[in-house]
Length: 80
Image (tube, rainbow, N blue to C red; front, side, top):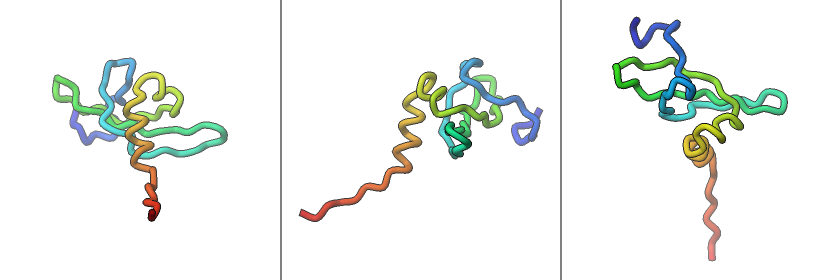
């Protein structure tokens, strides 16, 4: 199976895959759904992106969620 195959296996925390980043988040109803991109596995396979809620990621991989939130912050420098 090729890495660019649209039907490749999704990555997951349950399979011990390591998240590379959260590429996007979408609010649906009262939940935030995040698309997780994965690191390449030791055998060279690159898992397909997966969808997790922000609350699931907060428990399973809080640093990845924090890094995503930090990319969304807008820092305003206050003039002294």
